[in-house]
Amino acid sequence: MNSSRIKHSLVPIYRRSVRALPIIGTLHKEQYIASGSPTTDPLYKMVEKQATETAGTLFVGAGFITPGQLEEAKKTADSLSVPLERALVMLKMVSDDSVGKVQEADEMVSGGVISVDMAVRALRLARQHSMKVKDAVGVLGDIHKKTGRVQTITTPLTELLLSANMVTGEQVGRAIQQAQDTGMQTGRILVLNRDVSSWMMTAALNALILVRDGKIDKDQAQKALSTVGHRRISIEQALFELGLYVEKEGKTIKLGELAALAGFLSDSDMLECLEIELVKEKQFGQILLEQGIVTHELLEAAIVLQDMVANDSIRAFQAGQALRRARDNQVSVYQAVAELDPPVQAP
Image (cartoon, rainbow, N blue to C red):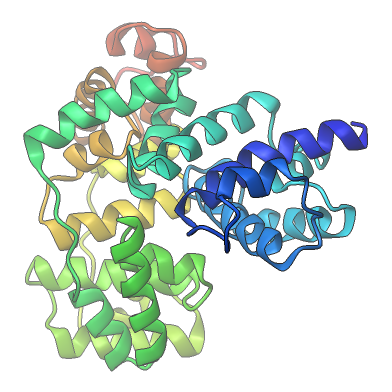
């Protein structure tokens, strides 16, 4: 890409970012852009940084790239003086189509049409089902109207992390402020900020689910989480070693596990869904719908496959394969099971 194309590709991002800025002396925002101010200008750098941060949140939040890839792309963008989107394409981390989707969502955010949280969820749905972002927003808007969703400030999650000395009050305070600004969950922001590892966040959320289900109390959760932090083991293993809890074996599979096996749910998405389940007290299936992970049809198929696993008709990994086949080939769940290779063996 030549320098003129790079410059032109950056202007829309710059233009969207300066909408929220006040008049610069006697020079209006649009005039400032049109004047061709050099990219070394401090104000230009400030709004460019703002645009990059929003775009980065959308790329990572929607699962297009990992936080590590984002950092690598930022360094490349800085060294070559190109937009983040261009750097991601140059590094072959995302396609032009993915960039287009993120830019569409970013425009809706900067225009005040949707929140960052809605943009992330719409991008997930658009990515999974080859939809336009605008159409995905419409689908999620209908679901949201039926269920409602309110951002909570303090949560059992932040309380547990603080009590186990996994985060500082300053880190939590910053994450809470970002949660209010973006509509995203506090726990997810702590992970995105690298204040807490995804490993520790998974342990904390699973501990809270056990507390919610009455299997352990908060003090036991805190002790187990501290053990996890020192030894990097699962929360279940920590509880077992402390003599506090033993997981009962059974042929069951959770919806989140099934979605993950089908390739619909990344680790970061799983963490966010678990947090919403705890904070909002919603059914996990409904959360998958709201987050744009699955459609109503896929959710119904997943529930059928859950029953099949519980009845020992198929194994968990086969259920994941069948769910993915049902989506990719647009067939019924029963046909997807029948087409499994190798075929399902009769019990």
